[in-house]
Image (cartoon, rainbow over all chains, first blue to last red; front, side, top):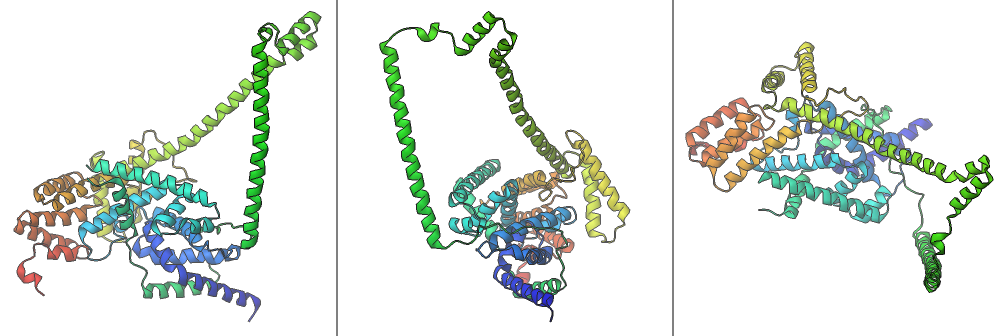
Length: 177
Length: 337
C-alpha cells in the first residue's frame, strides 16, 4: 500500500472515531437548527466530510463539539436556505415524532421556532455559547476551553444571551395574553 | 399567568426534547462517509469551517506559574499606580493650598501662552511668526476635520445599518407575500399553485415554477418599502421566511389550545374559526384542523367531530396526527382493537 493510501486510511479511522463519539450531538444540532428530518442524514455526512478535510488543522483540546456545532450551523443555514421554499411544509414537521400529541407537537414547534429565531439573531460566538450551555448543558469552563476564550468571556456572553432570551420570552408571553 | 423565567425554562426544555439517532441511520451514514472519504470527496455544499484556533498546549504547571506571574505583575503595577497617583494628589493639594493662601488674580490677568505669542508676533509684524502663532486656530480647524472624521464613523455605521434594514425590508416583503390579509388575491393564488405543486406531481414543468418565482418576486417588489435588489453576497436569512405570518398563526392556535385546556371549547372553536378565516391555507392549517376536531368533540358536537375526522383522515392519511385524530371522539367500536 502506498503512503497516500495509508494516510487516507488513518484519516478515515479518525473520522469514524469522531463520528461514533459525536454523531448524536451533531444530528440533534442539525435538526434543532431546522434541517428537515428527511435531509438530516445527508447533512450529517456533509458535516463529517468537512471535518475530514480540515482534520489536519484540528488540535485535540476538547474543542470538537464547538467545531461540530459551528459546522452544523453553516450546513443548516445552507440547507434551510435552499430548501426554504420547496420544503416549507415539510420543515414544519421535521421535528415531529409520529403520533405525538398535537398540543405537545405544537408547543414543541413553537419552542423550536422561537429558539432558532433567537439563535439566528445572535452572533456566531454568542449563539455557540448559548447553545452549548443552555441546550447541550456544557459547563462554562468546558465552553471556555472549547472556544479558546476566557472563562469570564463565556460568562459575559452567556449572561447577555440569557438576558436577551428572557426579554424575547417576556415579549412572547405578553403578546400571548 | 406563568412567570417569564418558568416560561424560558419550558421553551428550552421543549427545544431539547428530541430522541437520538437510531442505530440503522448511524451505520448508514458511517458507511457512506467511509466511502466518500476513501474517494477523497469534499462537501457538496462547498462549505469550509476551520476548527477553533487553540494556543499550543501548556502544562498545568507552567499555566499555574504563568498565572502567579500575572498576579504578581498586576499587584506591582497597582502599587506603582497608587504611589504615583497619591503623590500627584498630594502635589495638587499643596498647590491648591498655596493658591488659596496667595489670592493674586495672576492667572486671570496674565495672558495665556498662545495669546502672548500672538501679541509678540503682531508687534514684530512678522507674518511667519504670525503663522506660527496661529497654530492654535489651525489646530482648531484640524480638530474640526477630526470631528468630520468621527462623523464618518456613524455614516459608515448607517450604511451598514442601511443594509440590515434593507434586508429587513426584503424579509418583511417576503413575509407579506404569504400573509393572506396583505395581498389576499395573489397569495391565495400562490397558495393554490403551491398546493398544486405539492399535491399534484413532482415533475411540474419548469415554466410553472418560473411563474411562481416571478410572481413572488413581483409581489416582493410591490410590497417592499422601496424596491431593492437582492444582495447576492449577503442573502437575507430565509430560514424563518414567513415568520410574521407564522407568529400570527401561532398566537391564534395557542389561544385556542389554552381555551381547550381551560375547558372552554366554545372559545377555542371561535379562535380556530378566525384562524380558518384568516389563514385558510396557512402553514399550521393541519394543526388547526386537528385542534378543531378536538374542540368539536369537547364541545359535545360528536357527529361534527367524527365527520370532520373522517374528512381529515381521507385528505391526510399520512399525517403525524392521524392516530390522535382517529382516537378523538371515536365510536366505541373503533376504540377497542
